[in-house]
Length: 65
Image 1 (cartoon, rainbow, N blue to C red):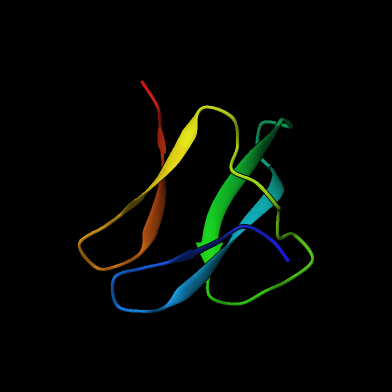
Image 2: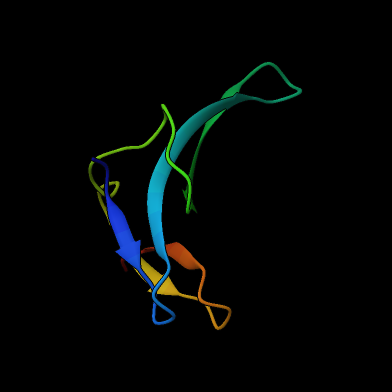
């Protein structure tokens, strides 16, 4: 089971990581929350990040300063 976050509305989200290819030939790692599972679910937060909840209830990663 991967890293989960339950928001104030009671919805549980799982943290995903995906590599995407950009148009200039480089790649970038995306982290996102989704209520659905999948092959790209990860077990821990990326180092240096914390979870905050948007006004809509969607969890977001925020860089720790």
